[in-house]
Length: 194
Image (cartoon, rainbow, N blue to C red; front, side, top):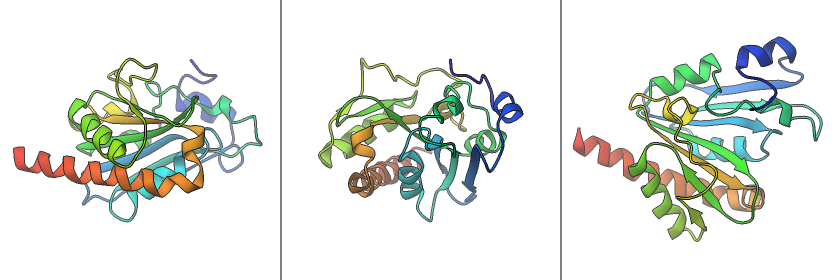
C-alpha cells in the first residue's frame, strides 16, 4: 500500500494546485471512461496517453502529481483504494472503463482487469500494432473488484500497465490508436449483444 489509503487522506496532507491537480471531462453521450489515476509526474506519460485515447469523444479523468521529480510517488493511491469522488462518479456511469498506468520493465504492455472480452480485444489491437502484450501471469492483474477500472456499470473493466520506454512521446499516438480501435470494436459488440 502507498502512503495514502484514500483520496480524503491524501487531500488532508497535500495541496491542490501545488502538489496535485485533477483534470476531467465528462462526455455523457459516450459509454466510455478513460482514467489515469496516477498521472502527471506520478507515472509519467499516462495522462497524455489517456487524453489521446479519450480524444474528443470519451470521458476522461486524470489525477496528476505536480511535485518535483522524485517526490510524486507518495501521491500514488493503490488502484483498489483510488476513490476520488469525481473519478468514481465518472466510472460508475460508463459501460466501458479503461485505466492507464505506468510500470517497470522494458517494451511491454501488461493487460489486466475483470473484463476478459475487452482485454482480449485490447491484446489483439496492441499486438497488431506491433507491441509486446502480456495478458496473463504477470504482477498487474487488476482483478480486485474495487480496482478503479472495475467500478463501471458492468462491474468490470480493463487496465493497461505500460513500461516507461513505451510511454515516451514517440509511442503515444500508436498506443492511443490501438486502444481506440479496441474500444470501437468492443463497444460495437456490446451494442449488438444488447
